[in-house]
Image 1: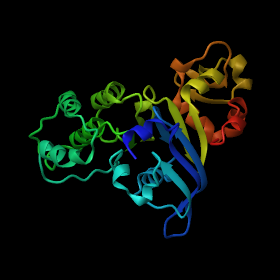
Image 2 (image 1 turned 180 degrees about the vertical axis):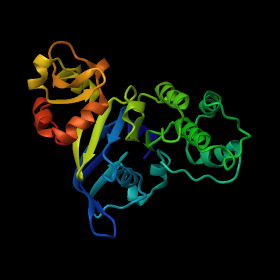
Image 3 (image 1 turned 120 degrees about the vertical axis):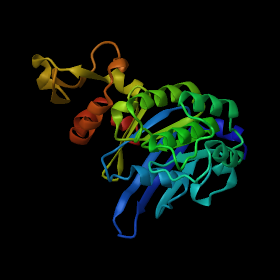
Image 4 (image 1 turned 90 degrees about the vertical axis):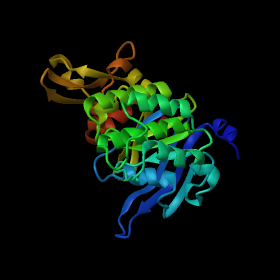
Length: 295
């Protein structure tokens, strides 16, 4: 199975009746259903302990489900086939690096990925203010993360899984990360970002997946949500019909059923996440959950 087969598939990721639990016996998620299309930047959201990292590891084949099916790029991840491993890369939140230069790390690791682009790697090293001669063991945690983000983007693989990529980055570096993803991620690549720092990635993500109580509560594109929902200040006369509201320093803000033109430029991932975990039923009636089996 070659790389060409990947791009013919409608979905990069599909899980059916996926269940997983650790030795304690408690299920992290049960009967989980998820489909993700190619060519999207997905924000995987959920409260601490909901299983975001566990789900990514199931998709990458580092953890094995007890029940159900997982299809990623047409492969079963747990089989860890070479052709699968060449097409997917996962960057964990906590990174462990060997004592070697960045140049040596890239030279050793890149040959496992046929799509690796050295020109992109060079540009990203420059963008992130790094030097090939830097020793990975001796640089700061933020510099280590930037080096591995550069490696991940330079691989050009069809599927990237990033777990809390902005943790450990300072404010300028977070901006560099967003710009690097926007510039170097190809249209046919799919990027899944697990995060709780929603404001860092709000302008980057085009699909939201929310994991709550072992289930996928939402799997919607921001474009579709913006057609159906308004995000922003809630005038006093509209507060009674608000789907969700909360106080802020500028007054009451929240979510209303959309009226008029779509408001994608004002979409608030933080407001939406808070609303889903507290006012799910009202929101789902608006976004027509019956048409999406993943909600």
